Length: 475
Ligand code: NAP
Image (tube, rainbow, N blue to C red):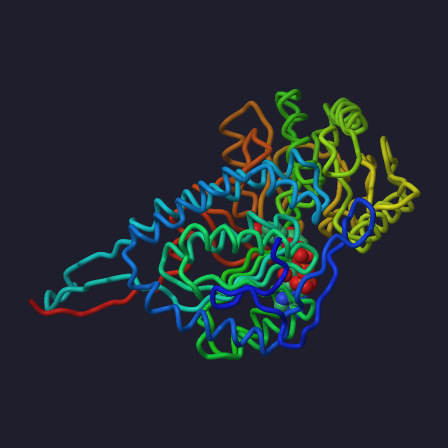
């Protein structure tokens, strides 16, 4: 497959000729070497995107939609090979990788349909003096920065609405997982995306190349998915040129189980909310709050299910939990677990890093976790479920909101009124009520507090790439 930069519709080496290695998380061995884009390449990518902008913006919405629809079809046809590629570079189990390809392709289908739903409105000014005509125009050149945990879906969730809106883009993928992004560029080209409309810039100097692009006045938007820490840096840089921002940042999802919940459903939901992607998801349940009467049974049953999972190389069909993406991630997960254990928690299952090659961590359930443990404040990003008990709605809401994050929460109860009351009281952009999975291309995905600004997916996702233009008219 292609391993060069993709700029202006061509595969080109980095101007410095530098390359970097992509590792296989199952072994730590080198999987591929990829061109390492630098600042000059970043500006060349912005040149290409800026040159392609007017042509793409004036391409009929139906045609833009049909290109995206074709990209959906190509991704669907090639789902097996794309899933294998994701699994190879990210480590996730094939079953998760296949799920990601379906989810990722659906963003192209959804935004193919949204491309023809760009509307405006007309109103009469309150004074009666004129009409207020509002139209929508593409924002312009967009810089898209994506993480390694969903290398296909985080890219399509941005490219889909940007292209539907008539914007052109430079995608800077995570350096752990650039291969999937390059495969997406090839698919989009085959689907008919004109040269320069989508550019892909793998780089090991992400900070420098993204800064260089944000300093370029032709760039009008940055859409970022990644950690809150890097999000803060990009918000500050975007302020310089007053660049439009969308920020999908970290999470610290509470998973609240009331004593009246259907425990079978809660366990199923917990397995999805915790273990999809081996726990490497911003939506991953990070803190389990279980009401006192059912906490022992919930912990025992969750530990049983977690310990039965098959851990192994992601590309092995039998594997249910692959390795984590890299050594730093394993070290961070292990430090959080050891910190919780040292402060008095017990590991009902897991809790010990295995010897041998690869970046593996065992599915782990912790009980008796101290309320001030770091594992309850930080994103774990691994297969670890810390459990804390509570009593009553007020305590559940207080514990759930005791975090600077607010991406998603999960609530299990058979009492619908309680479920809705608690869902409203929890400070989060999304709630799974008796459901362990919220992600859906048709729904607005995003967080409040330090989990981000803006929404991706749904109709809101398209609006992020459009500016409203108001024309005062007399007629
Ligand atoms: P990250 O370290 O913030 O990196 C995300 C992206 O930013 C990567 O492409 C990275 O490039 C790049 N980057 C790093 N430093 C940068 C800088 N100074 N300037 C510009 N770009 C920079 O996050 P990650 O570890 O890849 O991903 C995990 C995080 O993403 C978690 O916090 C997770 O919650 C969050 N996430 C959020 C959502 C959501 O929708 N809210 C979805 C998925 C993930 P390099 O790879 O080269 O460092």
